[in-house]
Length: 63
Image (cartoon, rainbow, N blue to C red; front, side, top):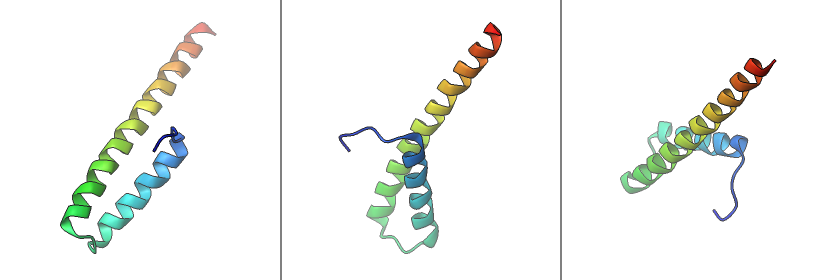
């Protein structure tokens, strides 16, 4: 992944990973890899939401 994904792209990938893991038809090694990728995507999404929440709060204080 050379280019930075958008929040929406990360969210979509995370949803696909969750769906794959929920099926239970994934070999253990792939399951661990998917879980790690999902955890990273989740962390990135939460950090993005936190940044925007902070911006909105700051903008609200200015008005």
